Structure formats: C-alpha cells, structure tokens
Image (cartoon, rainbow, N blue to C red; front, side, top):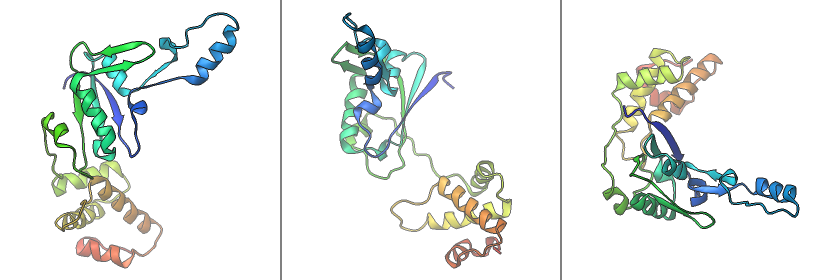
Length: 210
C-alpha cells in the first residue's frame, strides 16, 4: 500500500542492541590492519560497519517500512531500549557519531501476546487487534500453506482448533499450529499409521483417521 521496502527485525529471546543496531566487522578490520602494515588505516569506516535493521531504517527512512516482528519474544531490557529508539529515531555510534532520521519512519510492531508489553510502549502505538480467521478462511490458509492436506482434514483440524480456542488457555493455538496439526494428520494418513487416541478425540467426528 505504501510502496515501501520492508526492513524486518525479528525479535527472539536474548536479542540485544547489537543485533538490532549495528556491529563492527572485526575479521575484516583485522585483515585491513595486517594488509596496511605500517600505513595508517581507518578501521571505523563505513565498509567495516555491519548495519542491522534499525540502522538501515535510519539511513533510508523515506523509502522503507520497519517491521519489528514478535516484540513480545524479547525481554524487558530490549523493550526499554526499543522504546528509547522509537522516541527520537537516532543512533549514537561512538566511533563515528550520531545517525538521525530526517523524518520519523513508518514502524509496525507485531505481538503474539506471549507476555504483556510495557504500557509506555503501547501508548506510543496505534493498536489493532487481528482476530483469528473464520473457519472457511483458515481452512483455505491451511491448504495453501500445506498443499498436501485434503479439504476434509483441513476443515476437521480447523474445527478442533476452534474448540481449543474457547478453552481458558494461557496461549490459544494460532494459525501456524493449525497448519502443523493438519500436516501431521496428513503425514500419518500417508504412512498408514493410526492417529493417536488423543488426536482422534480432538478431531472428533469431522474426519476419520486410518
């Protein structure tokens, strides 16, 4: 819609500022020092800098969209760091100076709600809840993502997952789990194996396993 290039920062447990901002290419710096011999070489030039998603975004904010994916997978320290970045859209590199966006870039954050985000971060966002797709659409998604899955199997698994989502679970299964479950059912069928009893009970009468 915006005709922009997407720069994606995938969050994960243990992610730190270096993985999001920049790193120096130490092996390349060392090679440059050895090759220079007694001559002077600036090992803090742009050719030694490995720009990560946040720095890449600042360097070209007019043509990019920053996607910070699954922010809830990171820890609170990284969330606090990210909050600071989103406040002023600048990075201080001690060896070279400050990189600042000419104008605030477009930023999209996603969360699967594995934990609650800090209120300060949520206040700075326009929040939009994306609900689960309806059963017909979810079955179509399953068959698109896993082409070997029969429609009957996809519909049965979608119905079973839909029932699970009505239970008081800490984290209800998402569409990705639906796809994996349908793939597992199809694999068991293709191998002529019987579905595990718990699997058969969950599927119920929607589809018959071997």
